[in-house]
Image 1 (cartoon, rainbow, N blue to C red):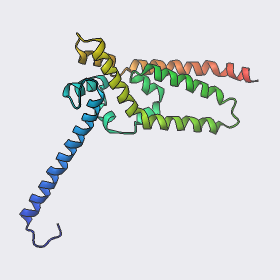
Image 2 (cartoon, helix red, strand yellow):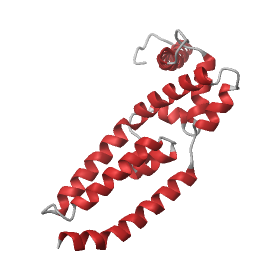
Image 3 (tube, helix red, strand yellow):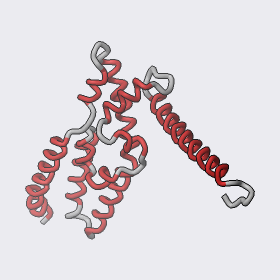
Length: 192
């Protein structure tokens, strides 16, 4: 503590109080994050345990990490395949088409580093924005499921429609590599 006039017991009590205050502040911060998520879930009027449970059921694996972190290393490294793994099919397939077009442009651009630079820049943007976009997407999907399937168990629907699909990620990556492998000779002939 640095103060000679405070005895050891008092200093220990002060440290314990500070530790408790930090823990309370952490809990308040978590509550505020959940309250913000709750406000975005329709009909909740703020934090609601049921809405958090539905969002947790929809997101599945990695819920705490996705809610808390800004940068997603898996989205950065795997791009469209991670997006498909998270069952965001339209975005994932759209990004795969864009990457195919980017691959085709690498035969036309004068320098390969241009294509690589564009690719890395896009991957950085995906890694930096994926978690917030995915949470917004998940909230929209939970709201849709709550409206469309009123008489069903919404938590089971959230687990079924949300979560992850390793099969989709693997199949899409294999198909993408095969398309690239078969398209490369065709593109080279087309350019000559």
